[in-house]
Length: 177
Image (cartoon, rainbow, N blue to C red; front, side, top):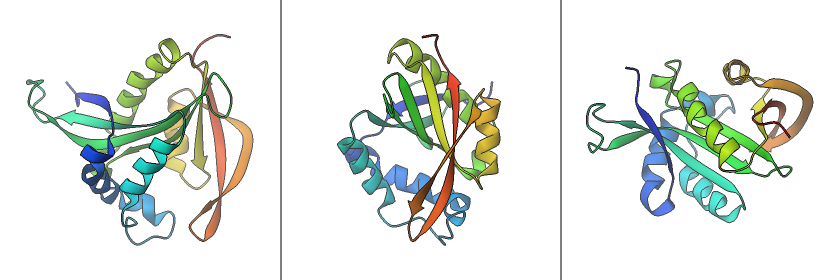
């Protein structure tokens, strides 16, 4: 069987160091923004921001250390950062789905989305999922398209550090109105 993963809510007191290590495991992501390395304290800043933002959740993608032993514990190998009922009621906005570079293109992101999407629809009452993707992040655009998302034609310029980047929006219906 492929990787066995779970999604767990990230907690600042418990997961800051593991999240910072995950961020360090995706140097290509930071390079897209012309950053040589992960910004210091990035994990702490994001976890604080998530706690202060209504409806925002940061879920860790955790892989079991021993696929045969559910009690063996796990390692943080990815992240799903999303917000419920934003920008509108019934919409979940996925700001990031990140997997450690060494584990990318192995179906982990697809497995994480397959776990999250039914929960969004059935438990959170979400009808539409929306993702924001930087126009230069071709891998992310292809990933979301493979999950059934389509470009909406909408875009926005967002500030990242000292520059602006174009963010494209993609959507997928999860449930009928």
